[in-house]
Length: 425
Image 1 (cartoon, rainbow, N blue to C red):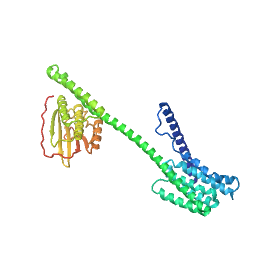
Image 2: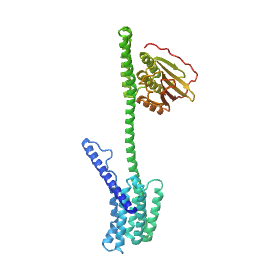
Image 3: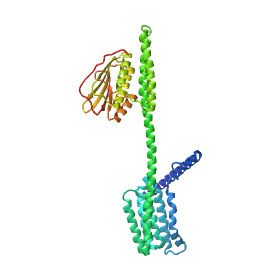
Image 4: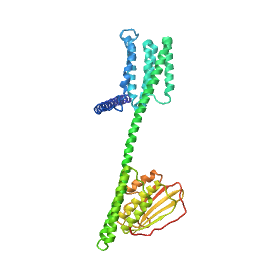
């Protein structure tokens, strides 16, 4: 029963290999037709490599087949059976050599060993043209084997061919041994190089695909962070202008002027995000946070300490401030928001944004410690790529807290906290 299952498995593998070959040929023909229409030479001008490329070498056994037909071989039934067995094993091994999983399978190695035994038996029994099955054995060996042991196995197979051929043909064994070594090493080199080229092409395509995905993700994050914050500020300032218009037209006009300024700045930032040259500024984002929070009737308190940060850290922390303040304005129903930037031990800088909101739409609703919205998830990935971290969750005293930490080259740990009182935008 195990033998029957093995045969059935081999038949399925053969059918799968034939289906893959047909699919590759169809793809190759389609590429050729497209290349002819476009007038450009295809990147891969040759057909996909398969076992069919190694089948013509079986013509080296035509001398032995001719001896059988002419009755010059003693015990022709044994010779015919040996020839059929060798050809069958050769076809089986060479067709499996172009699929990595099949090439490394135990059944392929066993078939290669059986092929060697049949070759030795036919060469010792008949000699003459039957000795040229050794180069065919070397070709199959080079098609299957890879790695550092190939040289040792190739030399061992060459020595075996030389000894057996010398026993049957004397000094003509040099030609058989040379042909065996050459077929083994050249076949292995060509197929290894071809496989390396295919792997490099596949790796290049994968890198290109990942680069496109990375750029799409960057663009998506930038648009989310830019438009989410900007639209929230515009909505808040529009509501403030509507409330102020009946009783204080000058204050309402000030809010409308801010809306125009925010809109123009948003256009600039979107252009910069599209071209990939946008670099955020923590100071700018803190100023915008004060304005947005004040317009939403939230008291902003900003504290900063430590040495100036690098441009990368400024940009990352600026994104965190923008996203956290947007959530406060949109969801928290808070009356106070504290933003603290400080140096901590082990050369890290920490940004904390805390509000006292209790609104039903607050980000903390239904969350334990963790990351909830799309914006915070994107910021978590950004900071993780820079060796930092982001935590977001409900505060023990109520409200919501977002904490970001980043490594810096040098941080001044001398506290010089500056509290900024709320001011009208």
